[in-house]
Length: 154
Image 1 (cartoon, rainbow, N blue to C red):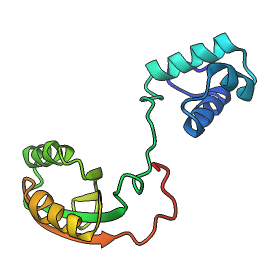
Image 2 (cartoon, rainbow, N blue to C red; image 1 turned 30 degrees about the vertical axis):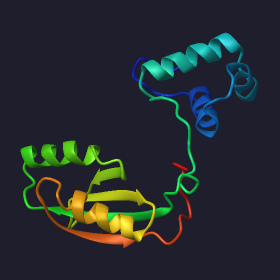
Image 3 (cartoon, rainbow, N blue to C red; image 1 turned 180 degrees about the horizontal axis):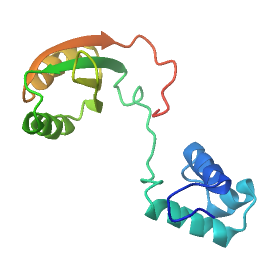
């Protein structure tokens, strides 16, 4: 079993791999797949949750079926990168439902956003009315995705 230092052993990693593939798998089926009896498997899952390895469970929905097939990646440059400005930007960008991901980047720009909308016209509106209005945004550059070759969030 893993130590208090938060290290994962091979069994923990096997459990996490199976849960990544199917978060709705029953404990009975998971136990069978990792070759561990049910109670120790349940105990390991509980510990992995408590230690923060498992952050939660969610449904993976098809954005295309929801009418949101358009993906753009937006480079954002801020006019101010002091802590207060970064905090203000971070708070505001979390409020935009069209922004699926926001990453602070060590590059010639400050943030990279993944934005999902129904089409290019909707994206243009989000960019012009929402993203450009975020605190301290000085300029943006857009890269439109033509095809998702690998996207483990879908």
